[in-house]
Image 1 (tube, rainbow, N blue to C red):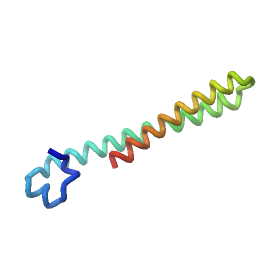
Image 2: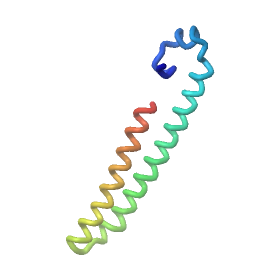
Image 3: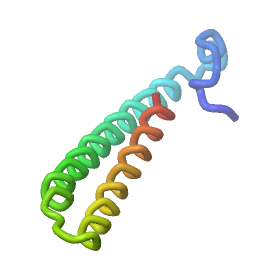
Image 4: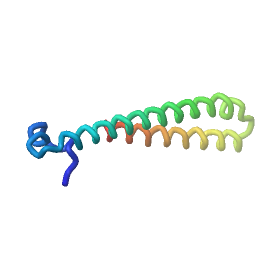
Length: 88
């Protein structure tokens, strides 16, 4: 069976699954909020790493490590964006 969001509004009522459709919508809102919170945290961490580690790096080794950490947070932010887009 497909999810109610994949059905037309008339089909949801015809099949009598309005309660399930409401539950799905509520779960999607929760998923969107979780993704936005994760995105907020990832971007904040990325900004903090850039300001503390990248700017203060004094050697090539520490610069590479700092950028590696920044890129990890960027990847996490991109993942959260994909989750948000999918849930929306």
